[in-house]
Length: 513
Image 1 (cartoon, rainbow, N blue to C red):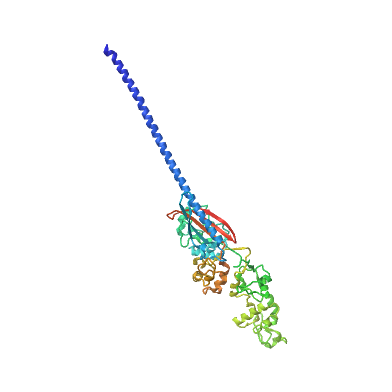
Image 2 (image 1 turned 180 degrees about the vertical axis):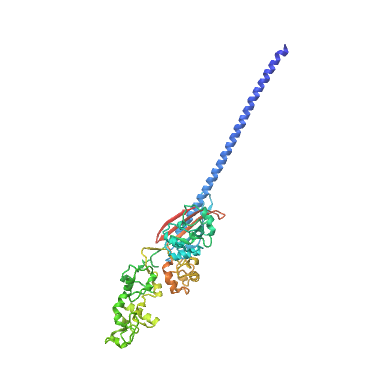
């Protein structure tokens, strides 16, 4: 009886014990799963937090370096606004690289470095203004081969595609290659650049010695159409005789007489100021009026006439006239005698006398039309005072004070020897440096285009060809400013084109990377 009554009791207790153990195990397992899930979630949250914090720190650093770069750009603008010289050269303060730093607004005692470079846009060739031969010279320098096919050469197609908003716009010209546009070593970097971005590649990209069109050409070069004193130049295509006769050369002497001014007006429709060198002192109208009154032979030796070809045939008795003594011998007449002729004033008379003194006697009366109102030396004296272009500004001139030898040698009439002579002249010690006001200007920059003729290597023909394409100052500049870390790595960059017109500054192009 005792065994039968205890056995079921034990059986029941064991089952209850197992059921109680199963419940505790499930609870433990559930707790462990919950803890695992919470740990994973916590790790994910912590990872996300670290990523977000890192992104925020990177964004903050990026913003700090961006504002450092922007501060450097403003520093560059300030440097340009303080420049008050009437020329622009590499010896001025603005042309020196700037390395400074600003205070870190988020880290007490911290500073952020920035680097700034300012370059003259007039040290590059303006593809919107340059003549086709100059563009062809530039392309040849960059390694482009001349073409001889039905579509013409690349330089011609570039000219036909004008105007361009940026240098990179020439990429659409048929025949343009990445090697020509960016330079050989820049091709890989150029492929990574944003297709919609404008202007030259970021300064973080290493440049070649040539660098392609993006580093040798521009569309922003501009100069004021005034003389060194800020006075508007006289337009030889529109000025009246009085305005022309009031033009003074560098020695403060009036260069043109009333008669010479009239000769300019009769000949004008000039493409350049160098065309003045071709203006005859005795115009066709004046010559027709005086041809029957002049001779190249002594009185009594004939009438000083000319045959159908204009050759002298005096000495033939069949052509003697009773009034032969009244003819003016242009080989011997003085200024007073010459001014007695209609249309010949004192200025033209002096040109005639100077010509025969340097070239010898006239062989026939037609040769008087070979006398010019202007010599190359005369042109040098007024090159800064006259213009053949309308407007307050002139685009596309090359600055002889900032352009490299490689660019200068491409200009009309120039070669490497002449270009090197120009650079040597601007870099030599200025003999008048002690008389300059502060700050001191390094070197001996040109302050007038006529000074080019003082260089032995620049002859009259070279000056005539290049005078219309050069300047000694600029109004357009490129400012590149970079925020850099302590290792010197560029983090952010600002690039802008600044055009300075007196006290006014405008920014026609801006980009940040």
